[in-house]
Image (cartoon, rainbow, N blue to C red; front, side, top):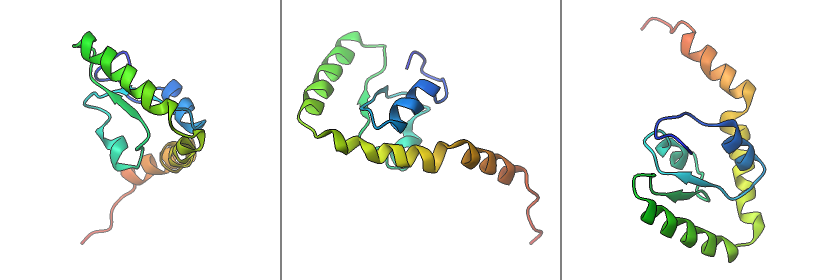
Length: 102
């Protein structure tokens, strides 16, 4: 990602929904993805350290070269479960739906 504070990009969601391996910068807006089970994402340090970023990318590429491609297909199901348009619309509607009085 090019920003430390951007939300989810369509490019990222498209890659994840196709089961492609993804590198994501470990920025403050992404920790929730780990809680949803996106365990196959290669988390790399922020852009404040180009040397660390280069090392992390090389390490992630070497690790992915040893994995079967099927490993990442779980991400597609997770994207549909959490970020599919009807799911997102229902989450927005639920947030504004009046709550019953206690």
